[in-house]
Amino acid sequence: MSSNPYSTPEDMNAGITRDEALAKVSKPATLLLVTGILSLLGAILSGLIPVFLPAFLESFLEQAANDPNFGEEQRQQIEDSMAMINSPLNYIGAVVGFIGAGIMCLGAMKMKKLESYGLSMAACIVALVPYLSSCCACIFPIAIGIWGIVVIANQDVKAHFS
Image 1 (cartoon, rainbow, N blue to C red):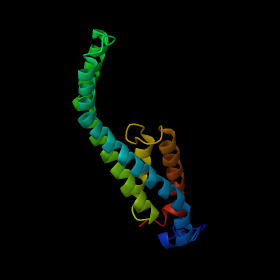
Image 2: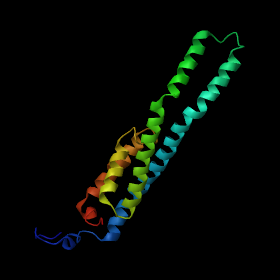
Image 3: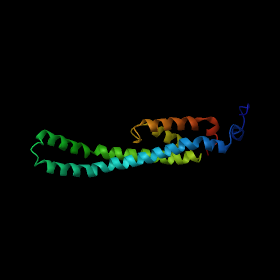
């Protein structure tokens, strides 16, 4: 780094080369992309569960109607579960998760190329929010998000973002 505080931004890139900066962001960006893809699949799955599960539970109730060991309390529990599954909140959650996963994927691709600092940072922050990343029991996306923030907040790396 230049000791001159009035140096131009080109002089500030003297810390590391662009290839070194790309190498530093490569692993966290790749893992963030994997996390985004898994979260995307999780969001799609959580959007499909309310479509298919009630039909399965209904067929189960029809079969259980002839079973003398199946009580009214158990039937009521299944019907309550069906009502909760069909809640609009499930669909809203799936859409929010889908948007969060999309931001993670897009930001990870931009981070890998050192293209958009703001979107890369947003992707890392989205990974920190447990509800937005439905991947791997929450600890994995949080760790990747923190790692990504630490790497891209480094002034030597940040200087190479376009």
